[in-house]
Image 1 (cartoon, helix red, strand yellow):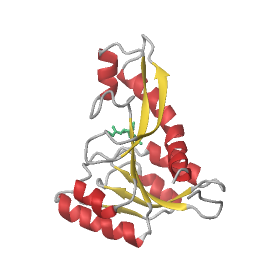
Image 2: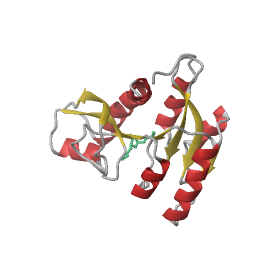
Image 3: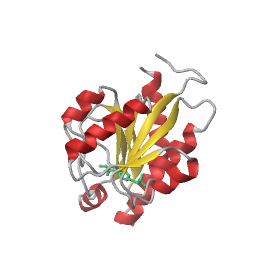
Length: 193
Ligand code: GAR
């Protein structure tokens, strides 16, 4: 079902740290013709820098204690229901999403990953791309399944790795494209529902 103006889909964004992708999701959601509205922000970390974007934008946010994953996910499911969330966007959320949670939520969950999946699932993607002397890196937005970084790809964008790049400069380049593709991927996904 294509979404029309004024009929935005409520999304929740889950973060663990810096939150720069959250910042751009909020920014893009504020455009009149955006297909989504960030209605809820979740962090597993009370010190996450990204929470400042939640405060600034006055979007409701909750810090969820992940010491016990089962209890954390029960709390999350209640919040997602309360805020009528139709789609979750993981944006640098560094906790595992259980199969039970995916089944119980029963709505799409997207993730952004800093590599050209299926290459470099998991951590240290920039380090691995540089060590292997790859010519390209990039970012991928994909559906979350119980298998790590393996769900259907919604959008992927490539960038060139230069001989001068190091982990830091590559991370910066990739982040820059992530800020564009995450919102684009959400819109693409919602328009194809
Ligand atoms: C992003 O580069 C995102 O792709 C990555 O964490 C960073 C979060 O940055 N996600 C993962 O590595 C997930 N496996 P941000 O907090 O500034 O949005």
